[in-house]
Length: 146
Image (cartoon, rainbow, N blue to C red; front, side, top):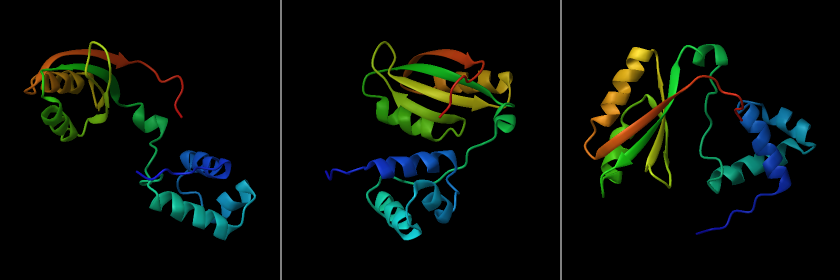
């Protein structure tokens, strides 16, 4: 496995892209105190080395505020992780899936348009073959998001 060297300038570049992935290269260069060609070369290197795997959309708080979000802790039957992961990957409301240590095996971060849809989604997750138990917590507010 290749070791990727990330410099302080790379970290600063990644931080700026985290704030706005559509920021023009010239603006990035100006904010970093680097030339445009240097920034472009850094971006290409970070993409080539797999540090940057894509660019995404950050949804507004107003838009996201209409959704009900929850953490769903999931306990799995032995040897069911690959099957359950594949099933959960096919459910668009599952926004993020983490493997964790402890009593539960997975934590799914889910988002639904209403409490009724969230209830249906949690039932759907609990009914998957290989899921033994779930425990859900509705997210009331997000205090810090980076």
